[in-house]
Image (cartoon, rainbow, N blue to C red; front, side, top):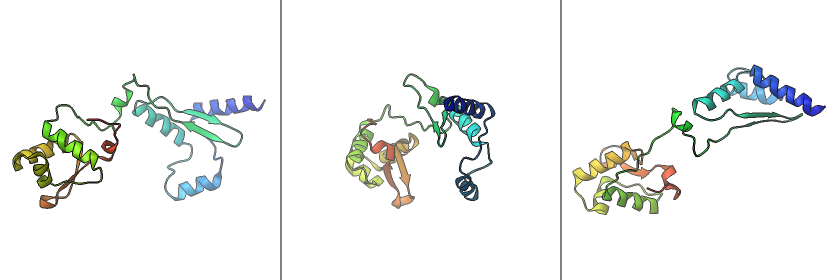
Length: 167
């Protein structure tokens, strides 16, 4: 009998998009911290955000004392994530040999930041070529640029420090 009641609660929540506060103290805390916009709007917001990012609708499960929302990843065959406005495209195609050499150097030294002078030393190239290569790597979102002028340093984006993402 209890399972039937829970299923009807889930159906009601899905239909209306509104749930009741299960723990008023936690809800009040989130409200005071400015982390809760409006009561009853969260489920609809989460469903819309998942859809906006090309993800399947989240699964809602309610128990007698629990409430669980599961966000699902997309399948490998799906290109729904391509519609996400927050997706960052990193283009590794057509890197020249100098760029590949520096990327490998930074991958082996993930906490290191390099300057243009370091790039010139590593690749044995000219200053203008180094500037073009570094600018290109920054535009591709492969390197992160910090500072200005002689204090400029370049480092790998944190995601690229993992060996999972080969260049």
